[in-house]
Image 1 (tube, one colour):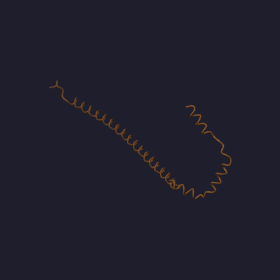
Image 2 (tube, one colour):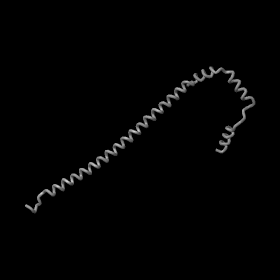
Image 3 (cartoon, one colour):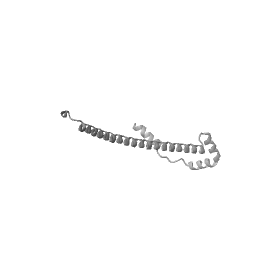
Image 4 (tube, helix red, strand yellow):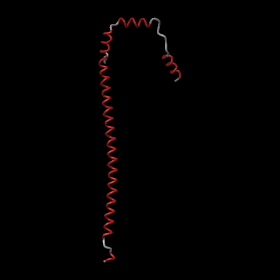
Length: 118
């Protein structure tokens, strides 16, 4: 493993360009017309404008997805809050009904004639 790492380091080591490289590069760039580069790019796939539109479309779709997800999260939170309120209301109602039932039973016991009186 060490040998492969050394070879990789050697291959990726920074080297000075050969003598005259910059001059040859600039001369080649000046020799080719700009339109030829643009036509070659269009032939190879997405051109500049098409690539920009594709990026814009991707960003718009990502924003729409984000907004929909956020809306879903808000609706879920609202639903959970409503559920908690409903459960609390049902507990309060159950307690009140139990209290009323106990009062009715208590009144019923007090108003009944006792068995010893007969």
